[in-house]
Length: 223
Image (cartoon, rainbow, N blue to C red; front, side, top):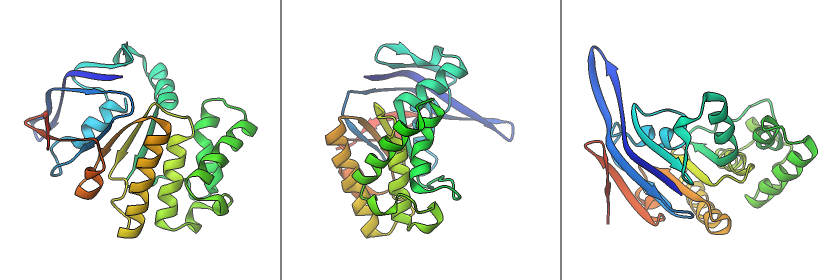
């Protein structure tokens, strides 16, 4: 499904070059769950951003279903990202003045889907993640766990082929973290979507079918 080959990414800082990813290769089949763990600064989020087409590598290839997505111009890349990839971050990035329903509808509206259809789809997903009674609540009226559920619902509203999550439970307490863990895995099983999770949390990583870290800029499989 997703194949990255010889991906390189470096950054310049104070006149020196820092190599983050070095000829990294990765293959993700449909429905697989991958946990990327390890210390800060090894390139976990950089890899996630490249897989999500939020950033481009310095060199290498990235293919989704045999399509060279790095060959897309910025407009086509943005359209592909909106249709095919869902994102969940440590910080919810919800629009505080909007309701849960309005926040979840946003990607569909951006894609040009009619408001009625977007509303129905968003409501269905919010019910699925346990927020049936919170549809009209503004983001600021929701608990941290509820806000993360809204963020997850927003990531799923376009029925993406891949879900990318960067420390999705990093700001949650144990109870809410466990609920999000269970929800992620049940949605993966139900929707057959590929999922990549960057996390410091070994318990969350243990849920994944594959676990890797990044060493010397390349993926290393963990037991």
